[in-house]
Image 1 (cartoon, one colour):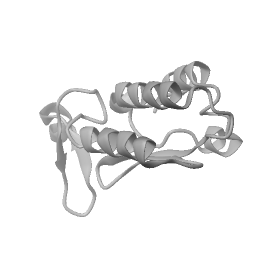
Image 2: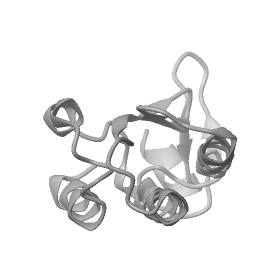
Image 3: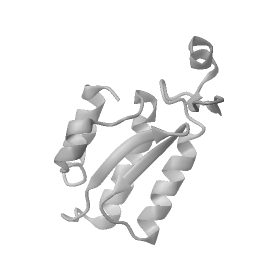
Length: 118
């Protein structure tokens, strides 16, 4: 994800993104999933009401889908994360348009336009 979009999320959800290790590695996914991450973080923040001990450990793409790891989670937060990860399998990781998970040895979820560019 671009540094500008990463910083937007860090600024908007400072309690979630206080993990210095995450800030070192960055978000290992494309800009197209920004809205999914923004909505997920908003839902988690509203649900936990600014809990100080809940931090994001890692954000990445794996097997063409978003992966989002927290320091802890309960069943409700787990459900939110599962839904976001499922949604990412239908949204282009590059641009945010409708997409499909494609690939053989390496999976990516991309729209038709970005599939042609691969």
